[in-house]
Length: 209
Image (cartoon, rainbow, N blue to C red; front, side):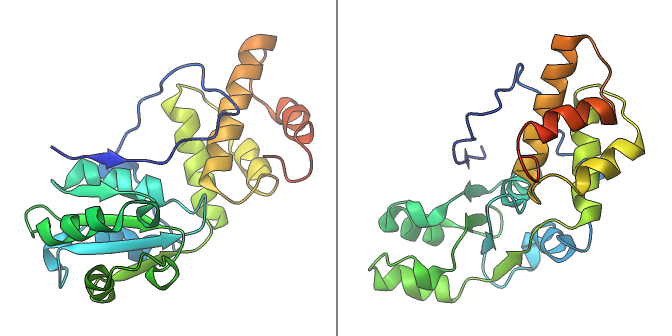
């Protein structure tokens, strides 16, 4: 049984419902921004050791890829690994096997963890590390379109393009703006259009969310 340890999501804006997440291969948004990372996570049997560390800034898509990885491989995912007890990471690393690989995520590389456990440091030094940059326009647009579709909302490509250049460049911001637009549209009995998006995004300050 796969164990997912995701960090706590931002408290605002609240999600009115627990929307299901589709982790099927065809629904994974892949662009040049995350193509190499997605290809690596798709083939854990080819890893030199059964552990990988995924590094990226907040909103870069670590949780998105970790969730997809967990849905397709009988492994363990530990997010924000640098915040966990070093002994737990050490034992998880030792327990990983090709049949049950381990994926760690963090905002920081291991040299900045300051855990003070030499045995863990040696194992992390032998662990493949892949990095995610900020989402590019294509990835942000694909994610926005997927989030609207997951909620059963049809929007035009013009709205997606409008949002891409106005919200913060993170997948968390994409989730937040879609949730807020959905809530506002329901409350106002309006369709989600650029005029509504302008009201909502401009109301959140520069660059939206």
